[in-house]
Amino acid sequence: MKEVVLTGIRSNDEPTLGNYIGAFLPMAAQAKQHSEQYAVHMFVPDLHSITTPIDYSQLHTRTMRNLSLFVACGLPLDNDSIYIYRQSYIPAHSELTWILDNFTGFGELSRMVEFKDKSAKLDNDRVSVGLFNYPVLMAADILLYGAKWVPVGEDQRQHLEFTRTIAQRLNNQFGLDLTLPETIEKQQEFVGRAAAPRIRSLKNPAKKMSKSVDDPAGTILLSDNPNDAYKKVMSAATDDVGAVHFDWDAQPGITNLLVILASLTNTPQDEVNEHWTGTTQYGEFKKHVAQSVYDCLEDLQTRIASVDTGAIEQHLQKSEQHMNQQANKTLLAVQKAVGLRT
Ligand code: TRP
Image (tube, rainbow, N blue to C red):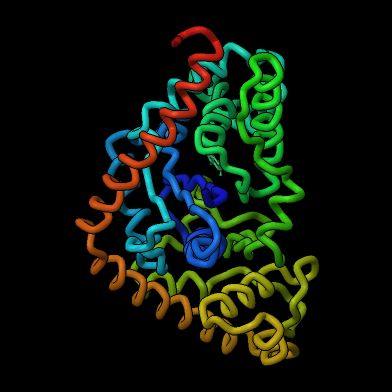
């Protein structure tokens, strides 16, 4: 049995250029690379999507659109070691969550930083029990398939630790044999290299480019008209240093553009930096970046439109059938352990 590499790909917001460079492209490339040695699980945590208020009428469409985007980024649908599936199509995720809930402390979940952050942004009556319970569902996602490799970002450290804790707790109490995911340090080693680039807002380069903050001029959506995107780059905030340098502290706006240019032209960062360092003509530099963004969107939008959605549906059905079988095995072992089945 191949070891499992498991990644959850959220689809709450409309994807931005930042998501494309920082997540979609590297994830599609890694999935292909890992599939030689591992079983690669890429699933859409759609049950997690409803833990905060969203436009529910769009959830299903958005999920399919994000999957099309992955395929447009090179994720293969015909690779036997890559499984793409939707969490809500595998009821064992919800079932196991409920059982794990009863071995999870209220205090334990209350200490989760992500919960505190997210709930602080919502009116009190909109902070749902689902949001509180988010880490338990995430633990179920991982434990059902015995995934050792869950390459998440630093922001998911506590959730990963929790998954290890709850698995260990059940193993100790019931003599179960749930596989613990590796620690976040091991996960980071596993992914290797520097983390994927994090693209900042074009208007406020101190902040991440994000659809969820109201920053239309600083955010390029993958659905933007390429001409509009070009203009957004041309009016990106820079600085009055007067010459281009790669320096996140002193010149975050310029540096952000250097990173975008390197990513979109598939050129090593050093090479791009070398070419532009010292240039005093910000306008000329911006035109190059703007053109690379224009070309990227135009090409990507064509590719997304030509993705075979029927093939995605077929892949989903096949994967989900297979995953239901796998997940139900783990679920049954846990159900037996806690006396729900004999
Ligand atoms: N919480 C993850 C994130 O915010 C998404 C996610 C849900 C996930 N379930 C998971 C990631 C299981 C890895 C494994 O990115």
